[in-house]
Length: 335
Image (cartoon, rainbow, N blue to C red; front, side, top):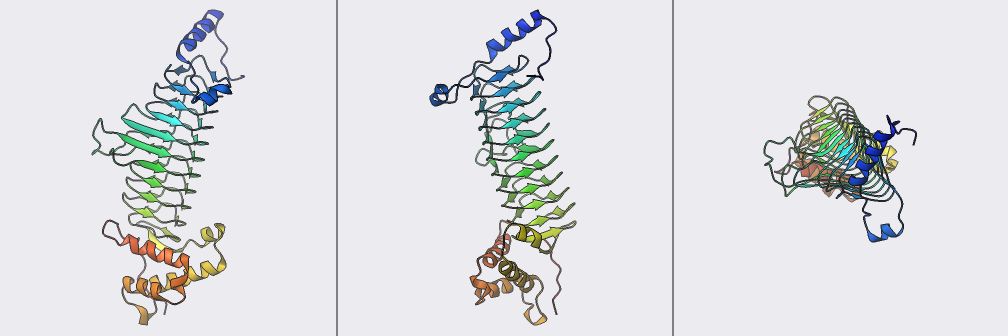
């Protein structure tokens, strides 16, 4: 391969080859894999523990480190200077870019699915920053498939043994984002650069944050919502809505996002009408928000539309005792 460094002399090359031959015994992940053996490439300067489990076609570049309890799936690629430690597992076709660090020598596990990219100098699956974490407790991180985690991002394990940090499938986490302990992130989300999620946050599906978004611990972001750039979110964002500002306020529905995700004109029209009834009531309809939610649920037309029912339930759930309420909204009427 062209990126191999030229050895200084034949003696140095022989020494490096002897070193790697003693450290990088390759054990297939299963007997079936052994039957269809495919060789792996390990650069002479890499340190691969003999107890590590490597799948077929693994490529480990210069100055990488693979710990004793690590499992690498088939066709994983570690670029120069990337490292994986502790009880960590990568599924098939994962890539660690230069400087990426996965896992930590802690009790618990870091589990990463298939077809994931861990970007340059990203740090994934290390100890949380919660002072309540007790040394020696198990802590966990579970990441699904087809995620791209870009440069300098950080994702931490859980703060306690009966919880875990979870990231689903098909997410894009852009550069310098932070996902703290015990967060639950769903599928198909886009977190733009410098999005910071505090602990115990729930992010549902198809959410888009703009750059420099900050979200307070224990908040919940509903599916298909949009967070404007530079927002500080200190309360829940219901489904389908758009917020921005410090502190973030409701700015209406995420209309462009809904169109892009295939919502019909009829569904969007119904959601807009329901939004007005809840947050922009006529002067003769200005009861409490609970009254307006109940009215929508009992409405002959709106009460039968699944998207409207879903939005109403998302708002109602945010007012439950364990939740933080919804982001501020302007108290004005449409008359």
